[in-house]
Length: 306
Image (tube, rainbow, N blue to C red; front, side, top):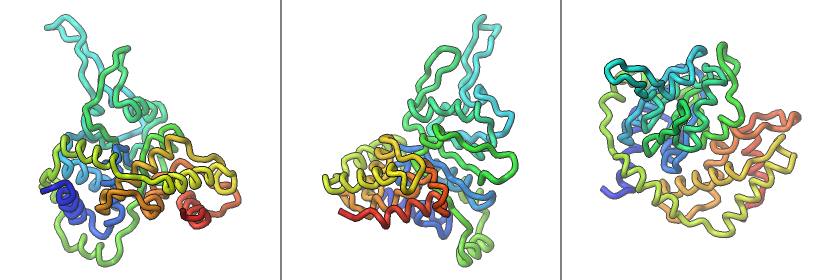
């Protein structure tokens, strides 16, 4: 199978596990093709962790799962050196962050101190423990789930942490037909355990290189800059998008175009990924009366197409 056929087979496989959510599944695949970290935010029980497991298994990536709790310490993620009597020296025991995919379940239930321990790993693909810097495996992704902020026992993720996530998606409740299939069908956890790996890590790295080659015209770059400038105007949001956010939107749009079997980015690709890529980085002005996602969509309507 060529790259396009492999990706279509992967999307089909994911949609058999997460039923009725093809757009969200495609967003997740686009995020990994763009080389970014993924944040899945929703109420408990709608399939966030199942989706994260299915993604890592389908991509053929080595993964580890950490349940974030209030007493989780940074060393529980990065690892620790333990004195071994036989060797008469300290030996480093790597933590779960040393995997190709770290499933950070309910990330906003950990303290800010532990959340900040992920910043270096997410940005620089390395961790510094006891003065020594150790590289992480490649590719490296954090797929995190979080509950809404108004639930008990949650801490709001700091802006610096949110900015490291390439995309934030929400699954939402299934429609009636999808929920009937869930009620009638097999246990989703058992299905995930039986999923075959349709790609290998080197396949994903090659696909990421192909995505990076998707063409973006000067007119399209002007459109993206107009959108970024609109976020900074003060009309829609308290603070605008950073250059890093603009790069993230461009990479996600390239991945979206690649999944649509095109070798160029269209304005529709930017519109398709902008709410998921930008909204978690933005705070609407106080008189907007809308959430960040709705405000991003309103801004999209107001900025003229090229």
